[in-house]
Length: 62
Image (cartoon, rainbow, N blue to C red):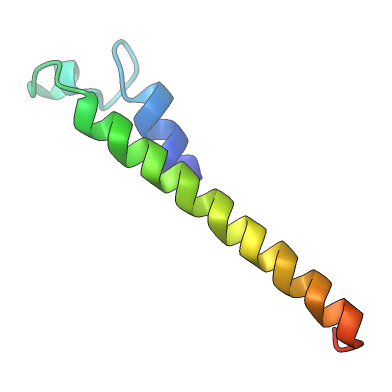
């Protein structure tokens, strides 16, 4: 989740390690896509873990 938020929010100037400071230009579309995918993956993993925990409690095995 932290990596996804970094790619979406903090990977732009004037923050450290952005494209402009390391000489890579201003192309951020790929990082926006990667950020959305990472945040979506974190949300999916969180949802699956909550679902499996709830199912285990209903079965009586925690």
